[in-house]
Image 1 (cartoon, rainbow, N blue to C red):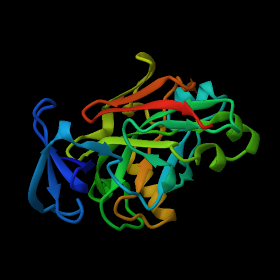
Image 2 (image 1 turned 90 degrees about the vertical axis):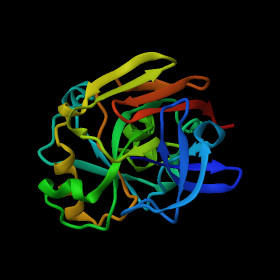
Image 3 (image 1 turned 45 degrees about the horizontal axis):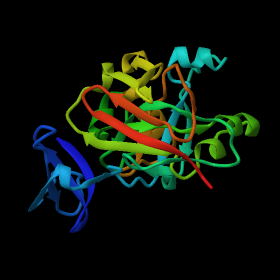
Image 4 (image 1 turned 135 degrees about the vertical axis):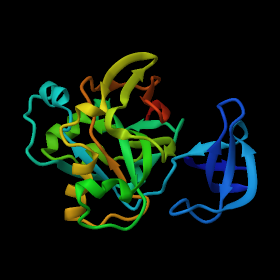
Amino acid sequence: MRLGRIASPDGVAFVAIEGDDGDARAKEIAEHPFGTPTFTGRSWPLSDVRLLAPILASKVVCIGKNYAAHIAEMGGEAPDDPVIFIKPNTSIVGPRVPIVRPPSSSRVDYEGELAAVIGRPCKDVPAAQARSAILGYTVANDVTARDLQQADGQWTRGKGFDSFCPLGPWIETEIDPSDLEIRTELDGAVVQRSRTSLMVHDIGAIVEWISSIMTLLPGDVLLTGTPEGVGPMTAGQEVSVVVEGIGTLTNPVVDRN
């Protein structure tokens, strides 16, 4: 099932998206998409509504240094345990919403990633049971002000600006995340291409590690790391992240006045 959030003439709603791209419809979900969704009976052609970020997270927990080739290009070494950091939920935006480069940064980078969305409250989840805690998977861009990250020596400011966590276009609930192609395109040119099978720490290990530290709540988002090829974006460009079997997340880039 593809789960999303839309803005329609009737307001904002969680939806299930059914059908092919040309004939896809958004079926309104009553209340929330967790557990077994129930439907109101209302629906819209997908072409008549605007896709929003598919979930409103209480927190976004991210994994750094999770692809060996990316670690090498950044001049580091693979960690024994996952390295985590948090992006504020105010950094979340949906498809087609601009990524806003702050005036305090001279280098803002794209980082295409697979994201997991938590489906139930959970704590201390064994890796083998991680799938039971996950609602599904979506596409993410862990936008980073690289110069600020390096200047601060930690990552909160460089990764925490408003618009620095694009998510979408929807959540795919029925997919095996273990070996999916992940690709980032900047103005149509491929700048990142890898596979999720090359993660240093897989989804199960990520869920186990994070849930051993903090309780995860329905809708929380886990970003699983970016592969090699990260680089800067400038105003006027457009960045797209594509994850096989899920979809494409596209955002324009602008400067904040």
